[in-house]
Length: 95
Image (spheres, rainbow, N blue to C red):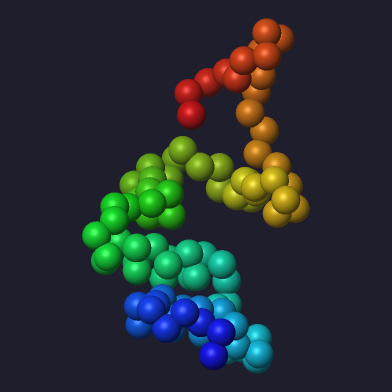
């Protein structure tokens, strides 16, 4: 077995599901995987992450999100997130 024997049972279960040979046995989408990883993190004493923050904002402030716009993609994931830059070279807006 290649997995560290010191892993917690929930993390081990997630990794085993990710490593299944049969694609039907793996996570159907990365958002589900992210949720389960975050659930483990949160229940081990760490605070909320960007995944739960985004879900909260989408639920309670849906007007902030364009309905027809695809979600932003990270560099290296088939797209980029553009941050406007002023001529001086400094980024604009609050992040």
